Length: 249
Image 1 (cartoon, helix red, strand yellow):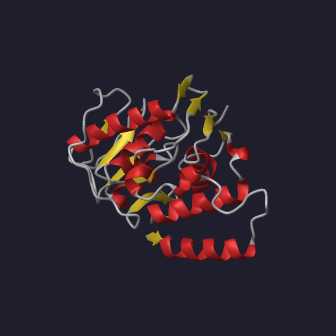
Image 2 (image 1 turned 120 degrees about the vertical axis):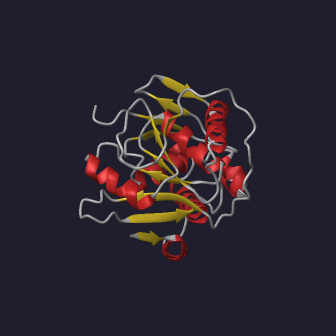
Image 3 (image 1 turned 45 degrees about the vertical axis):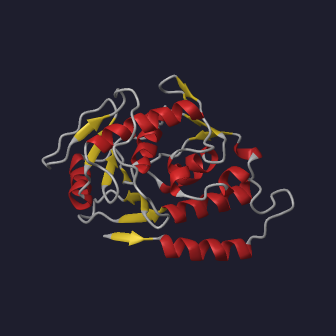
C-alpha cells in the first residue's frame, strides 16, 4: 500500500506555520540558498549543498566532491536505462555513499526507495517485490534476491561523463519512498514529492534557524523519515555540514 503525502504535507505545513509564528530571530525565508531552489534541476544538482564528514569511513567531502560523486554515479544509472518514472532502491544507509547514491538517483529523475538493510531478508524481499525497483544500490554488501533486479555497487565507478539524458523533472514528481518493514505481510509505503520535501525543509529552516544547523550530527537512520529529511537534508541543503556517526557504536 502506498500513501501519497503531497497534499497532506502541504496542508499540514500551512496550518503549522499559522499556529507557530516565527520569532524575530528567525524571520520567514531567511536563507537565500533554499529560496533559490526554483527548479528540481537545481535541487538535484546540489546547488548550495553543504559538506559531509563520515566518521565511520573516515571521509570528508565538501559540496564539490559530493556533487562529483553523485553525478558520476548518475551517469552509470543513466547508461543502464534508469531514469524518469523509475524507482531505485538504496539498500544501505548512514554513510557519505548513501547521499551520493540518493542525489544520483534524483539527478536522473528517478524516485529513491530507502530501505533498512538490517531487516530480515523476507521483509526486504517483500518490499522489493511490491515496489518493483529498476535497480538495487548497495555499498560493500551482497544482497540475495530471487527477483530479476540488477544489483549495483556504485562506490567505484568511471570518471564523470555527461548524462545520457537530462530529464525534465517537475516538483510534482515523486522523490522519495519510505516503507515500514512489511512484517504484517503487506509493505506500507509513503511517497513524498519534491515539492513536499522542499516545503518541509523550508519550514524546518524557518523554525530552527541556520545557525543551529551549521554542523549537524546525524544520529537517526537515513531510511527513516526524520533521519533523512529533518536530521540530514535540512542542514545539508541549507549549505550546512553534516557529520555521520556510525550507528550502533
